[in-house]
Structure formats: structure tokens, C-alpha cells
Length: 307
Image 1 (cartoon, rainbow, N blue to C red):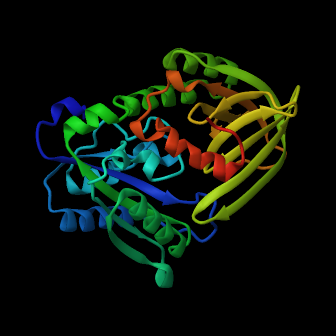
Image 2: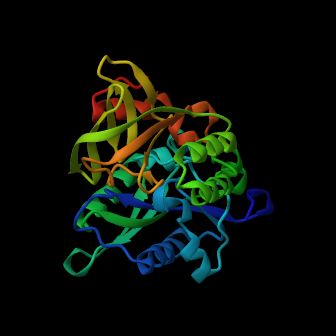
């Protein structure tokens, strides 16, 4: 549903929070539904729609199951048009409102690791507590959070980004056996982009820490490239230090054998890949990844200059 069709009520964000590569993660559709039910009980506001926290991997379809079961429309205005690591980045710039009280519910895990968490507080504190819930649940939780008005969503979300992702997905399905043609068509949909090189993944260093996947990928092509990641790919540069892309630019690895894009949790040594980038100016981005103060966190985590 387009955000313009929602005239009243509130819109909540749904997401999965945690480390995609965590070995003990356990998340079911029922966890996402339970998270939304808890949220409606505690928030006590009329929900007219739900939005995904981002585009990327499974997250593009965040909310579709909840919508089908609970009858609340999914709105084509994710909090961010690309994937990002932190809750604040997917919070529509609400961290800039000093009096805003965040409401977040998180559900995940199995047996002794099963958790249900309800948090109220500042956006940053609430996000940290939800991240810790993901750690306790084995690596991943389903989250519902932050009711806002439709007008606020129009101003701060990546309006239309789900439709764009579906269009790109159709291109991938139609052309995954011809990667060069596929990327050319994707760049036309987005309005630009470039192929940096083809190569083989020589080394992957990944550490799951504090509910995040953190590490780097070394790729040998015409040059030797290093990609750092914090759940998502953050920087791309070659051995001379030349920088090709910096978050929130989009850094993409396409598996040459499958024709499919790869997440940081999927890459492994020996994979043959195409390295591609899309500059941030061509992406549909939410307010949460445009704040320089938020982007400084990336520098601290990956040890690379971002700003």
C-alpha cells in the first residue's frame, strides 16, 4: 500500500535484529506475530500500517506475514531503502527528537533461549536492550517498534523502495544466468552504478560480537580488494588504499555461479564474485542513515574513515 492512502492512525516498523551468521539463532514466523501482538498491547495506539526497517535479504518482506495474519497493511515506505546494521539507522531520524519515547517489542529463541522483551525509553537505549535480547535469544529476534504518523513516514522513510526492490528482483530472476546483462539492467532501474571488477574471495574474517557480524573480505581480481562489514558491507578499497565506495553507498557481491547477490554472512573463501557499487545519491534512503553522528559509529566498529 502507498503511504498516501493512509489518512489516520499510526505506522509501526518491523524488523529482525541480530547477527545473521549466529549459529544458535532461532526465529519463526510466530515470533514476528507475537512481537506485533505484544506491541499493540503495550503501545495502545491504532495501527493503520506497518513498514519494514530496510531493504535487504529477507528484510524486504518484513511485515508481510504479520500483515497476512493480523490484517494490517504493509506500506511501501521502508525506514531505509538499503540494509544497515543498527536500530537507530532504521528509526526514521527519531533519534533527533529528544522527547520521543521509543516502544519496542522483541521475540525470538527456542526453549531456554526463548525471550519476549518489551522496552520503553530513549531510542538508543531501547535499541541496545533489543540487541542484547538478540544475543540472549541465540542471535536473532523479531522486533516491532516506534509508532509514528503517516506524515512523519512520508517525510523520513524511503517511499517506494519496496516496489523498486521487487522490480530489481524480477530482473535478477530473469537474467541471473547472464550477470553482466543483469547488472546493466539493474543499474538502469536505479539510475546508475558500476562494476568494479571480477574476482575470487581469498579470505573471510568474521566475528559475531554483541549481536553483530563484524569482519572483512579479501578479494583477488585485477587488484586485491578489501571489503569491511558490520552486518552490511561498509567500505570497499584496494591494496593501494583507493576507496571505491563507503556506506551508505551500496556495495554488492554477485555470486558468478548463481547470479545472486550475497550477504556478508554468505560469503566464503573460493567464491567467484562480481564486485559492484551504487552511490548513495541514487539510493532511496531514510533519515536514519543520513546523520553524520550516526555514521561515526561505523568508523569505530570497522576501523575505517567514513566521513
